[in-house]
Image (cartoon, rainbow, N blue to C red; front, side):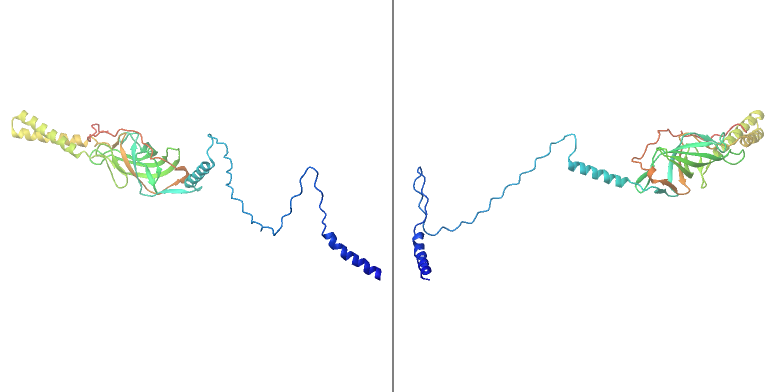
Length: 308
């Protein structure tokens, strides 16, 4: 027991001595004495300053290709084309209606006359002015219209005028689109005295003025001849009677003026029923252009001197 106490006392007294003699390694021969240790409290740690923000480095621009449009321009162009395509797109089977009663001005390409025309003969017209529906051209100028003569009546010897009746059946647009038509004239400028009635019948001039003139001339000539032959008023009266009879005979034995539609006659027709057009076939961008065709010259009614 005593031995153990002695050992513990020895350990206690030996520890301070060891603590006062710290082990300091000897400096190398070529170096000076070690630096003295700093004494006193250490300075407080300084807070770390944040790094300044760095400017972002722009990405290098791709090599420009002058032959190809930029991405933005290409996108804008594609959008524009898509908008145009949407605007011009037409639903399959869509129809455009040209209403009944629409007036269409035409010009005649082949002249016709009651003297030689018979029912079934063809007539050919061309549109002079574009027809529009909802602000769009659906029948351009220069469209062709064909028809036929349905009736032809020569003027009578005593009374009656020459008469022509035509019907328009088919229209061909400039792009070749064929349309069924049903129209009749309501006005015609033939250069003469022809007129159009409410049924679309074209009537020739009556030539009444010319008939009166013929009778007056023959009566006057007969009176002059009778007066000269007899040298008396009675002879003149007899001659006038003979001249009157001759004038009446001339009127009765000859036909009145023929009803004519010379080449270049302008005609206005009216649609008798609505006309349906395929919307995808009437996408015209301009008004069209009609042929330059001279109109008919002005003419006076002429009685046909041949009785047949």
